[in-house]
Amino acid sequence: MLRLILALRYIMLIASIGAGVGAALMFWEGAAEVAGAADAMVMGEDRKTVIAAIMHGTDAFLFGIVLIIFAYAIAFGFVLDRRFASSDQVPAWMRVSSISELKTTLVEVILLYLVVDFATDWPEGQVTISWEMLAKPLSILAIAVAFGVFSALHPRGE
Image (tube, rainbow, N blue to C red):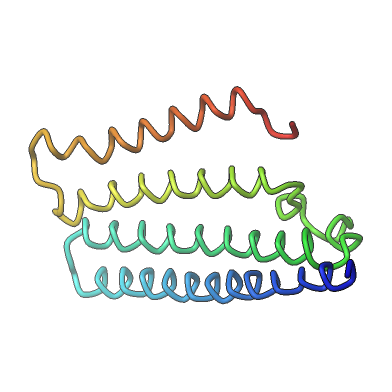
């Protein structure tokens, strides 16, 4: 019975593979955005359009990196042999010690994505000037403050 239950952990490899495929797609998206920015610059497009495309591309690359870390952490943290995962061959930034660390990374990336999303709305002209435009940045600030308080109360490693 215990063997059956332990064998079920291999199902988590589906999540790891999915995160890896998602990372590849995000790298593709980021490359397409940066290529589009280069094309827009060559064609003499507005500077704000180029900046927004580069910001979107950088954001996609960052999210792809996080997905690679998640795929690695799921595979070697929960399914496969941990000896390789803790070896010196693996960079320190890819070593994840707990689910809590994964969750913290996810919240940090979500906050970064929200900030970049709002920042790219400006050059794209999607933000109308009114008091309502403060809703998104105030929400981001509230999430960041709550996350900061939570992190202070529950430091990593505890």
